Amino acid sequence: MLYEFMRYKSLIDRPLVKIALNSELEIFISSLISMLKTIQAQLDSDEVDVKMYQPPEMSPVVQQVQWAKQMEAKVKDIQTCAEKYLKEFESSAELQKLAIQVLKDLKTMYTQLHEEWSRDLQAQVKSGTLQLSLDKPVVEFSASSKMMVVNFNSRLVWVELEARALAALGLPTPAAAAHIDTLAAALGDARALQQVASFHNTLGERMIPSTRPMMLQAALDLSTLVQDQRAVYWNDAEQLQNYTDKLKKIVLKLESQNTYLTSQHIAIRNIVEILMDTELLAKQAEWKKHVKNIRDIIETVEANGYKNTELWRSHWDWQLYKALECQYIKTLLSLHKHFPLVKIDLVLRGRSVRIQPPLEEIRVQHYHQLRRLVALPAHFVGLRAAADNIFAAIVDKHSWLGNRAVKQLEAALAALERTREAWTRRASLACVPDLHTLCTEHLKEPGDWEANFKACKAYGQAVAKMSFEDERIDWIIVVTATLRHEFEAQARNLWTCLMSSLQTNCREDAAAVDTFIANAMVMLENKALPKNAKELAEISGKQQALQEKMPEFIA
Image (cartoon, rainbow, N blue to C red; front, top):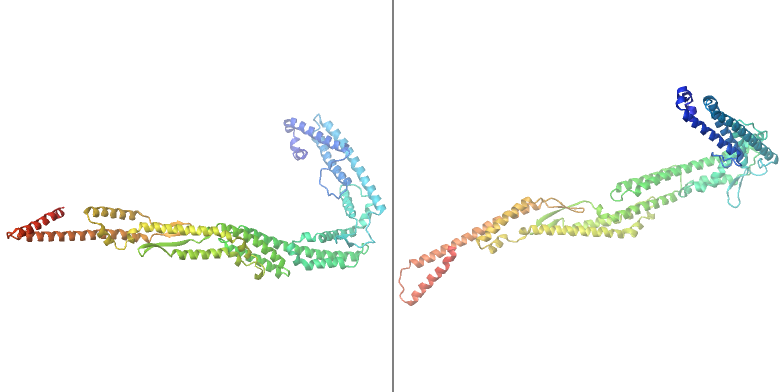
């Protein structure tokens, strides 16, 4: 709130605005008094709570001095605010009085702390603890851990930073700090060597395990320099500078190599992550493209002079193995969804509806595709030599999951056969070897022809209403349009056979009538009288036969 007030102080200082904000300003003054009391309470406590970030190596004394100087600046702002803009308020006098007291206490605090820090520094200089180890080499290696150790008191660096921090706050520099200034050049080398040591000791952690062989030469150069170099001491400035420069050069080279290889490693990782979500069958082209991109990255790295990439290639082959295995399992569980669309025709041949191409040919084609899809990982080309193909094991482990696709395939083919049988029943008339003979044998009475003519007409109308649209059985499309002409021909053929059988029957009946009339005329035209009982019986028998046939022709 204080800084917001100072931001708009010219506006708030206007009489009308100040009158309008009278109650708010009273509350503001109360909050400032509360803030000063909080600072004073911290000063009176045994331990000051410094609520700001500071490096853990910096001494608590310096941290408290920095806190006191910050609080001093804040209290001065409060004091200025009260004197210039809030003096007409009743609580302003209390605020100013409290601010003066807090400023006095803060100054007393950081002055005492600064003197304490100066005395401590002077004591360390006199005791020799803030000295470089001139009798020891600059760099040594730990016998137990083989870690690189820089022989200098790290407290020297922090004392230098603390002296600079206090000087920046306007506090006087103690005489003992001049000793630190004489070591400025050596401390600069010490900081550089400490960074090199830190890099050397954590080199294994910085490197990606699979890329370590590719940086072997640079790592050996660093190890050789730090281990085989003759001892260098702090008092030899020229040799120390040269040694530090050499180390920094090799470390920079190793760091640049590690950064480059890490970036390429991450680039390949991003590609593999994409492959984890890329369908194996539907997007085979993308798989080939991404694997080619990985191979191009590795070849580019090799072209830049990096050798021993076998471990790196092996690492990414196994990551590709995981991605391929993941997508392979997903594909096998839904393999029936990846069959290409197949169009087959239902045709009428040999007095029956048949599938074209034949069902067995379709089955052979699909099983061939199924075997090819199941064996796909065995033909996957990785990043290493072809002799080290690890992807064939995926087929051995998970190919049994293709049984689900086999069941789905057989179910689809069985449904196709049922569809064929259904259309065969619909085309039953076309399956009759001799429809004319069938009509001749079973149609005797006029009612027979009448019923069949009506049925033939209804069948023709039903055929006209049939859509003959393609039927879909999973991935199989059954084309029935070719049967339309057969069904229409069936209707026409049935009508023709009915007409032909009716005409034939009419001709046979007419011939029978003509024969009957001729026989009757011959008998009736014979006027000779019977001479005996035998002739009379013959004439009676012929008349009786004619009378028995009469009802047939009358009907």
